Length: 72
Image (cartoon, rainbow, N blue to C red; front, side, top):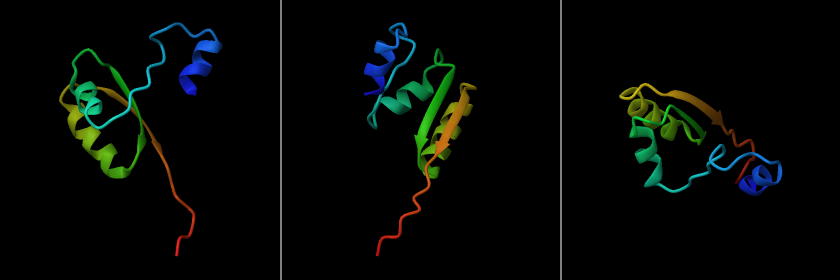
């Protein structure tokens, strides 16, 4: 949906890239040509990305999701 909205808004191809999956993330974080990573996920995922990204000095932006629902 976000990719479709980006195209409809006229954002050029390649500016917004949405990649999902457990295998793609580490490859992107480790790649020396990737300069910035934006992540939405758990604290554990964020910590792993920070450790890995430190080896290639990346700019990082994190979105923290807090579940306020009471299940039980």
